[in-house]
Length: 142
Image (cartoon, rainbow, N blue to C red; front, top):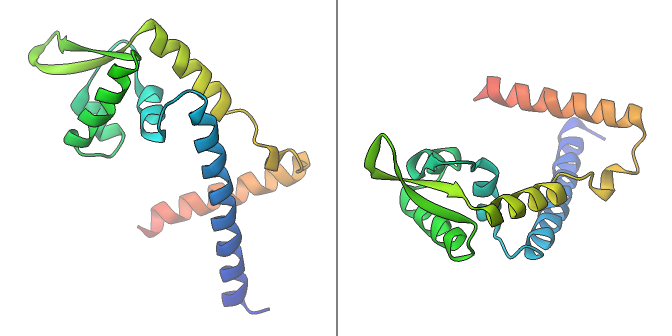
């Protein structure tokens, strides 16, 4: 098999794995009635972060961040507070319920996925090394 065909086969398998993992994430998040964007925002939240800074962390527009914040606030997971250093700026802070949901979501999302349970430790080590090499080389190439 030539290098081009092998690379094409690898990309096809990576897409298939990506789709499986995305489905797993969506299914798990449905249990908590949060979207992937809401879960990612929860991951970055604590006692308070300006909404603009959170939008930067999520790589999204501030207006889109407002919609995410609205959804989290409607669920009682966050509250908007004035920024102590600039009252024009709104911070998002987790509520007690938000902390519970954040912990549960992260616990479910970061547990070992079933597809990795079939690999031996040496296979996991090899896969980790390959993935790291791919990530590093992609940063160098861009």
